[in-house]
Image (cartoon, rainbow, N blue to C red):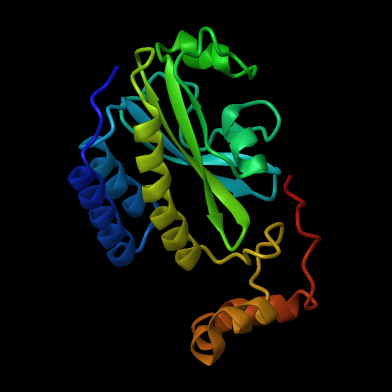
Length: 219
């Protein structure tokens, strides 16, 4: 079994991830920085960031950390909400951690992951105000490479990632199936300052008639 991270290491990783989330202005920058932090306390080989794509009602891989040159799971690849671990985690808003994919297979995509040489995986939902906006996953090349302790660290760090991404992604998190920002939700979230910050998004919302599509129900 992998060594258990110390309390000091956990605290340090969370503090550093928080600093990155507060000072970085792009999704890729946040993800790459946080992955570097996680690498010091979680023995994973590759990580992926997937965000919800309303146009395709799927999760789109927007960034990858670690080797992936010959992988089918590359930036831009769409992940179905019903056919893979990422989709399940997004739907249920729950962490899913498996120590050995060969004996704990659950989804059609598992075979592809195994064929690429990976055996253990942990996926954590990115949730803001009760709504899933994406998933962060880490995978290892050996069975039992990741532990419950490691999953807990990824969960804690992912909370910082979710909040940071929510502040830079121009999307209403309450009505997640629309690309425009709802003025009522903006006003409730931050008052006059926030409304001024999103003036352009509000104008877009108004030009579209003031109504977005129905929000997606998440189990």
